[in-house]
Length: 346
Image 1 (cartoon, rainbow, N blue to C red):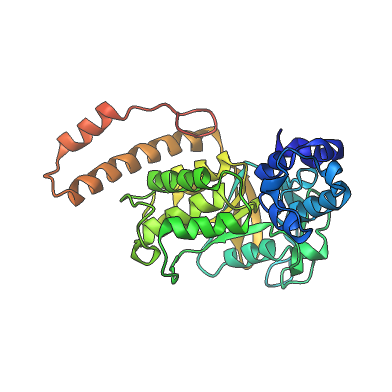
Image 2: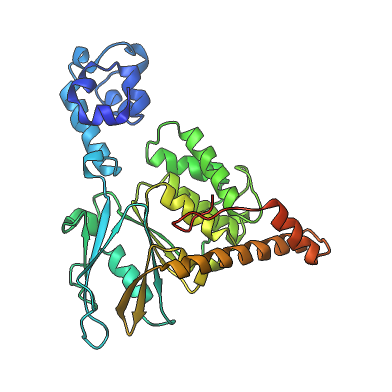
């Protein structure tokens, strides 16, 4: 029995046992309790036998929509329709589409309008912001619930500074998030989030670590892993990940590996060249849309090599070691990697 099968097949819901359904939909326990049914007393019965099949199906569909889990409405792309810059001049493109698993980098001087573009996407602008841009979801205008609340959130935003104020442990925080999303196999999913976060952070932490004790890099790595694995938001907006003290390229791999649509404002040349496309911002408008060239992909490979060497030196210095050419040579001997055609490490 698989969740996707149940969501698309009413007959499967009617014939599945209560035990099967509760495993797939933990929130169904509250529905049954409201009907005076104790799941433990009727685990092998079906909803049809209980006379609750139709009501339960409506409840499941409603919760799937609320949680953003309706597979029939899976968001596979967003599109940005051109607007204007600060002087009212039109942006020189018609429409830019970004698909799941793609990375778009936003570059330009401080104050050029990068944050305004991220805000337009976050708000699903419909020519009602200073830029007059429009943002489409799956090539259609988003409904009002996606813009003004009441529906599942499309966008998750990772700001430059992550400060926690909850006095709970990492595990407790993730458990609360998983519970709010009625996540099946929540314990396993939370464990995966922590493991992934530790792969990104410069210094590891455990589930028992208090949120308020996390460093800036640890907090950022936790939120990236949480956004990738626990959050249902298909679009991730990132502002200057280069200053977070984490493995930036690995963070992008985690997000795109979960089929997120990633748009990132950055001044980091390595991250800019890693993107599938980069948007050049000037005077509040998108001046140009560029795709990485073959020459730039070669340059990216060299930048990654230098970045890995710098990371090796930084780690050695933190451990109190003496460093020199031998440090780099040891790194090169043990960290040979190939680069694939999309600029990703293998």
